[in-house]
Length: 404
Image (cartoon, rainbow, N blue to C red; front, side):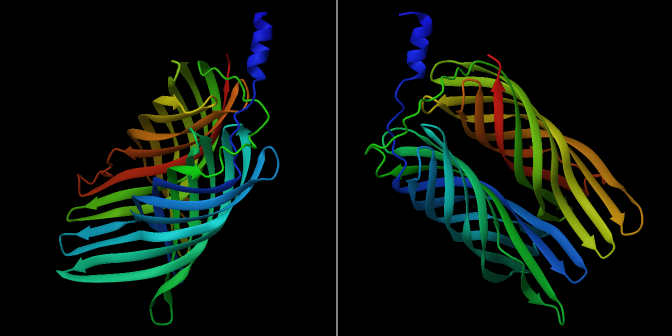
């Protein structure tokens, strides 16, 4: 048999017989950030933010409507501690947390290859918020339940047997609602969250036939690549003032990113390096009548290394980390007047994260990746009286083209 004929046989092998239709249950852990937009008549602040982690249990049903398209429904319950905190000289301490909640919705998916599903989701979200604290030694507590909507994107890939591994990003908005009557006016708060989950599902019908009939691409992970990505995320500025701390000032937005890199395939493992440059619309914003003040995380770059394990013939699960640099800009403007910078600085730091990447052709991959980035303190020339430690959580959906 010729080498060319042998290669054709490999490319045309039968695809795995994994059946995506059926009932599943799952669990996962994740991280995220919340941003609370505060508003009273004439004033809007986006916002007060905080970071945290959560755990989740899920159940759902999927149905393959064609060889590559899937429709399904899900319900999830989660418990966590995402939210801001405030302390002041031991006199005031307060924590506002997204404690528990659930989401129920629908998702639509497409088989990127026989082993990996890419999908979008949307639906209803319910969240229980709790404010705990103390003032001068006396405690207080306040709770509120909120309803809203969730939108998201994810990837799910076959592990072994009936098990799958998934990564998922969700954005949730819980509506603008009054929380305090100010005598003819009201204080309104609109919470939103950005979360990333890594989890596993057990699919009861996975081994009962009905798998995809098309072949997986033959992808060699070794080589140079270029890529691009779109993403979303939230920033939280941890402010330390002598005698107090606010964690923190929050903002959210979207970004675009370009990357170049090199991977080396070691059989069951892949290792590589990657360089990214991005331009971002992640922003905190304060409107005071005609005055607007904006805090932007507008552009930056990363130099990262990653290592991953092949979870099946087409898909890589990996962790990534390294050096990051971010430019921040605090600027203001007046309606009908001028605008200018208030403070402008760049900060070095680190990023850590992980994701799934899967082959869609012999030279192309797509992936979903989460990163947590933390940057050096900035004291704004105050001699340590005021210090800001920025933290940014981002999720990106990207594609890469490998040259060889």
